[in-house]
Image 1 (cartoon, rainbow, N blue to C red):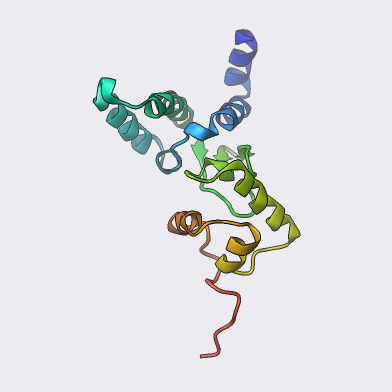
Image 2 (tube, rainbow, N blue to C red):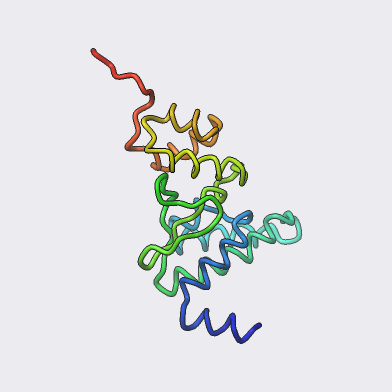
Length: 163
């Protein structure tokens, strides 16, 4: 098994990283990883500075951050969540980048991620309000997506303003 993993890591690195992060999406620091190597290094240093006081979740995250740093240092990158391209639970390869799935968003569970994908298949979202209703997305998740620039193309409400 180790030989197979090493083969993919060397000869098909994006397939390896997409598979690795798909399995580890629960321990994924989306904010740091999208920003690149410097942000990932900073987050690693923050966790290492805590030493024995680091939580179990942070210790698990540390391993994932190290793999993400390796990926970025090899010339690959992470893109932001994409409302129309991200999958519910799997990372997608896009050129030399990975597009994270919806369940990589902190606090967003697999069921909501699946709801967003199902609602997207029914048709484009007309507004943020439409995404919230059809995708069954909480206000907190909607604010998270909005703050990361994922919803820039959507108006707030379905109604048009006449004035």
